[in-house]
Length: 151
Length: 151
DNA sequence: CAGACTATTGAAGATGATTATCAATAAGCA
DNA sequence: TGCTTATTGATAATCATCTTCAATAGTCTG
Ligand SMILES: [Mn+2]
Ligand SMILES: [Mn+2]
Ligand SMILES: [Zn+2]
Ligand SMILES: [Zn+2]
Image 1 (cartoon, chains in turn red, blue, orange, green):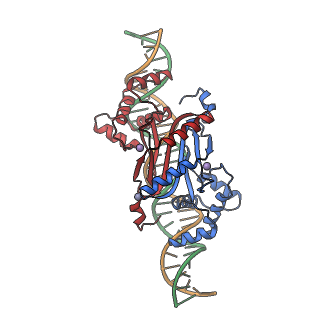
Image 2: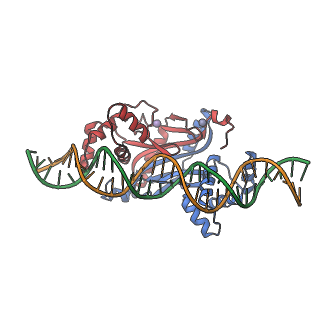
Image 3: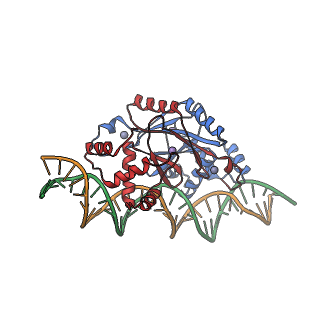
């Protein structure tokens, strides 16, 4: 959960015998410039990259996003059924959690440093190397509570 | 997050115009008798049901498990890549969270009532009807930190 | 308790997000 | 500037999950 620049990303990749490519740098930039509260799926990323003139293949997008999640640079979120969303994994005080409507997927972000503390402490106690810590509240939003549609 | 019996399950299903079937009751029983720390995938459930002489179809298992998650009876967990796991959604003091190794999926459960409080309070403040609240700590376990295998 | 209504089931096939393959390309390094 | 090999893009493959639909069986009513 650190702040990454192209340089620090390169350094960390090279450390592991990997490489910094224009594609990886471009994808990092997309996330770094993503307004708070936005979350991108692989498909979203693909579209957005195309629109800005960076036609990166879906294969590469899937690989990159997975790699960055494993490195702790991105967070992998289950905000909707059927596909994952990603956002930058930022440290305190940007770190936050999600309240998700299981019917319409409307999502509200909220912060809690006590949760982050519990997460760090628990990982440390067990000797785990922390990558991400996210509270997911699955619930039904006020609007969907009124809807008569089943389930 | 209530404790369910076959009767209370029937009552809640009927309230919504739905039905209690032997399949649904059997699946609820499986989860009610599952030892702490166990989590079942749809495929796991299918196998286990077959073994105990209840050959319920995979279709029905997927439907039931999804239905019960939407009702708040089961929790849907992302403990490993590629498939979901389910467990009973129990109230305090059985309610717990998961510390997950992203490389080998080894999972450790832990409790925290402060997190549960944050979850309830947040849902309530936004007018959401709470179904489940789970802290997922994604990390790398001690054993996998030592492994040389990439990512 | 029987009959009507319709939710549910099981079998089979479809879907679609994500991965695997592999030849061509291009980082990193000396 | 070359050498090694990680990475990319195109394509095909995977496989967890959902859909369809005819047959079955809960629930409700009289
Ligand atoms: Mn977010
Ligand atoms: Mn558990
Ligand atoms: Zn909603
Ligand atoms: Zn591990």
